[in-house]
Image (cartoon, rainbow, N blue to C red):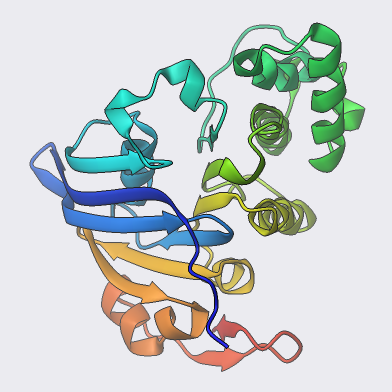
Length: 260
């Protein structure tokens, strides 16, 4: 039986970008599909976060990008925000908002009533396990707590996007403890199962192998490997890209690759 082709959420062709004399994207092309998690992997400075910023419109690059079958430059920011949610690696917010108020900011593009926004944000805070922080002032939270509050904000923002949602996560597990790392990626899996296109920048190859449907390894502005976990995470590719020898074995329960 042939699997149905998944619809393209983002199509990028011929992306070129250089900053400070360094080539970050070199005639880069990629399609991101609804209904799956795409993990962007690679060493520091490989262009992963830069690619995410270009795809969401934060950075300009040469080339062509379509979002939901429409050229990127034809989208009005407020309209696109109904479908595209981005969790950056670092979120700068110094105002003395409560965690609940930060999560409710996700409802702004949706023209929700204050009551509906609060109801949805409260639900998403429960998902990201920050309900107990709702009355805490945001600046007083730890790095991991702030990350989870902002994730609730992004989930609130995408709550009406249905299967047109595009979720971009830039190193979402970097400040999280073990349980919340897995919880965050499980939420991403749930989003993909509902039809969202999910793109995650990760450094942890084992987390990527466990949760991503597709792994794209990037280095020097080019794709070095693209496929499922077993296709992308072979020892030769990892050593060539990361400059470090590894052993790849099979997880005893889930049968995904484990990098040692």
